[in-house]
Structure formats: structure tokens, C-alpha cells
Image (cartoon, rainbow, N blue to C red; front, side):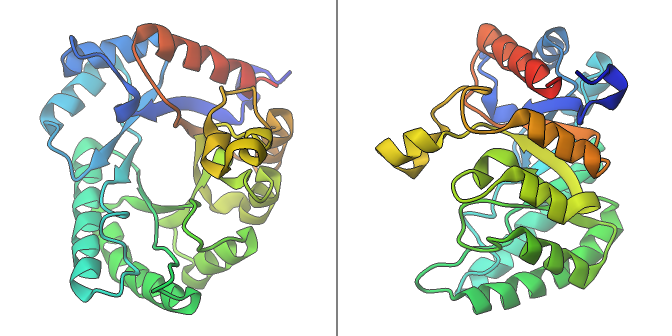
Length: 274
């Protein structure tokens, strides 16, 4: 068991949308997260949440705002055949970077596009690359990094390809947001960790069961609690330590109220000490 100074996930966050606390204001919500032992929380952006209240509650509670999730990368993909949709996607990402700067977040999670029957793999690569060329000056202006995520988008399916795309730019404000659960459908997290290495900026924690996938379909694979699926957490932890990662990990699972969030936090604590 690693000691507290050698944990692969040094700080634990969660997504704002996981919190079901309708009776709490923003300050009360941050106080709850601090009480439960969360180190941070990520918001979506663009957002209607009051940014001044968020930053004030973060400072008062000690619960950080380490990252932002682009709220428009699915509705306005950067690889769309429609030029206006792509332009709106660029504007949404720029707004997300601005929001991150305002609240003191260091990263914005971005899904760089998707391959569809209408958008070929080669076209998606060309458009995603062009979008990143446009967005990196915005990252430089704001000082906020862009972290690409592996999702079920039929694009960037290999960790070697993901690493090659990042290396094409070789930019300190472009890296990877590694979603561990998303990989299990057709691969192994340890392979992605080995291939991406220091390019990993953030990690998303979720679970996946291939048994449920085989029995009930791909999306049902996520219907399993942390620590009860096919993620080999001891191997994941060892691989992350092997590449020198000891940063933020954000939980992305179905949330709830105080009891549910407390259970999630306890599960993560057990997993990161394997």
C-alpha cells in the first residue's frame, strides 16, 4: 500500500452535476464537499452559475476549482460538416477558457470531435487539428491548458494516435484528460497510461464492466459501482506512478446527496491506495 506521499491521485475532485443538494446555496455546497473530503469540483462552461460566488466559496472552503468541462463540444462539434456549427464550437471553447481563467482553473476538458457516417476519420482529423491550431493561441492568452479526452466518439481510438496528435503540436498547454472507464470497452487503461505518459494532465475516475456490456449492451457496462467492475486499480495506480503522475483525479459517476457522495469519496480513497 502506498503512503500518502506516493498516491497516483494526489487530489480528488468531482463534477458539479453530480451534486444533488437543492437546499444548499453555493457556499453551502462547497462546505459540504469540504466536509466529505473532496479537494475540488469541476464545472461545465459556458455556464449560468455566478462565477464570483463560486470563487468566493472555493476560497472560503478550501475546495479548489481545478478544471472546467466544455459544455458545447457535443452539441457543436469541432468536426461537424456545418461551418457555422464548427464556429459555434470554437466560440464555446473560447468562452470555457475564459471561464477557467476567471475562476482560477488550470484546464478545460475538450472532446476534439467525432467520426460519424457523414464525417470521415480523415476529415475529423483535419478539422480537429485546424481547431486546435485556432484554440491554442486562446489557451496562451488565458494561460489555461486544453486537455483532450478519450470518449466514445469513434475518433482517436489508439493511445499511440492520441500521443502522436499531441506531439504534432508539442505545446505545454495541450495534453490529455484520461478517462479510465471509457477505455475498458475495447482496451486497457495501462496501455494508455504507458503511451501518453507525461502528456496526461488530468484523470477521470469511473468504472466499467465488460460482463454487463456483453450481457446488456455497451452503455450498461457503466452500471457498476467503483471498485466492482473490470478496472484493475492496482495496475492503474502502478502505471500512473510509473509515468510520474500524481495529480488531480475527477470522479464522474452518478451522484446524489450527502450519503451518496460520502460513499463515492470512500470508494475512491480505497481504490487509490491499492
